[in-house]
Length: 104
Image (cartoon, rainbow, N blue to C red; front, side, top):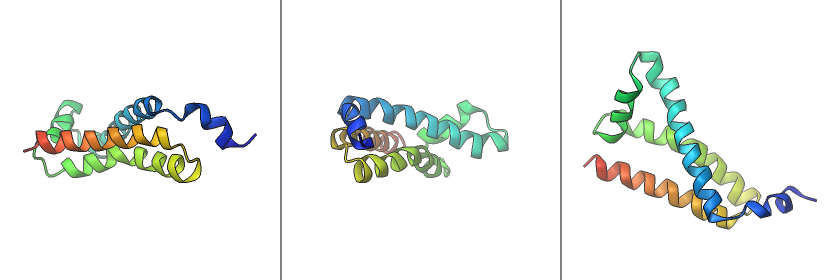
């Protein structure tokens, strides 16, 4: 049984949404420990940087989306789980739009 056949039961948009939300949070926390924690910035201020017109906003946004981009490559091109990808991409696009609109 190949890995694609084993993963077929997870090919649902709802699972893609849940995984994408978890990865966004993990990506954000990872970006905090890489960039914010080393400069002694509290997590609350680092979170405000994401939602305000901070010069670091784009760095935080991109770093938060990196896990989703990596998963997108495997799920879309390697395993061909297209319903899962719909949820993953939807969360990523909505997250970016929210950040852009909140920073205006």
